Length: 428
Image 1 (cartoon, rainbow, N blue to C red):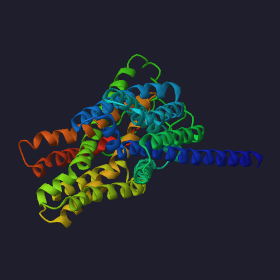
Image 2: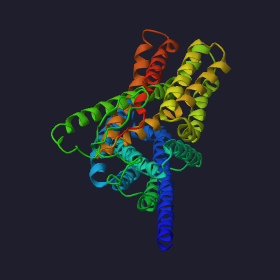
Image 3: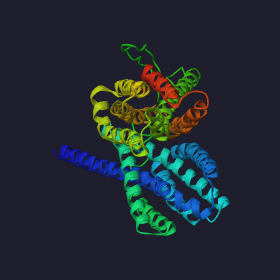
């Protein structure tokens, strides 16, 4: 009786700590979106003060993105070594301080340095907070990743509203960004101690069977005796290399899916408004509804994607979500009517909304001691797709109409639909 009571108390304590950690991760994701939005809304004021042209700003944004990829690749191994909680704290602090840099920049050179630092911190935070989110999701034993990404969008909305309000009130960008940096540091200090410690040594769910026991085949999957905890007796020299090889192939496959999905998302972010204006000949206010339709369904979909994933599985969500997005892009290309075009962009946003969180969950649960490094590889290639998609569309518009160029994201999401099986949970 006493033992049962002690176990019940321990379980209650663990559940309480996990719930607190989940709330802390929500805060970190919202903080990341908030900081990005604070930079974006102040771009006009900052470029005016620093004398940076639009073409130069484009190069600086690419520099920021490149620094972000460097931050991702560095943060992965560091998170594996020191734990994601430590890296979240360091990256969130860097990002919070770095958001002040663009506000203090006095010319092109200082703005370039400031954006590189901000991009580096943001990239490192992306990897470390998603790695921590995987730990929390594993402790919850049900899908919750998409909700974290929804909070990122919510933080971005909050930042844009606050930034717009301060600009309307006539506040100097340096004052607003200084207050944002202070708030970011305060949030970091409050949230990070409540995150979960590194859980690499904890058994995964379901727990792996013994290394020598073969696992029965399931439909669509061959039987195998692969172990994630180490080679079986007598197999010390034979099994590690194939396992590492399989791991690398899985990471590459997940990265390819992330590239395709984020390519489509990047195209929607940067070209939806222009596509509607050019294709349908509408005014700018009506054209802006295209991006609004995409953003609204993207955010709403992320709040519901976890339940869908829990009910039908990761693979189904990625497959049918990608198919819905493909239908949306097809409708966009075929429609000559504003309501149908808006429906197409809404379908694309809803279809894509839950796909990326499933990819990151799969990358963080490959069953190795390099989960953060694996996630960093998936992140960096996916992020490259987010940048490459809009650039490819821009190049194609010199040869074909913008609407015809929407075939690129259409093909990308169809390929994601075809190869959705790569996000299936790892079998041990």
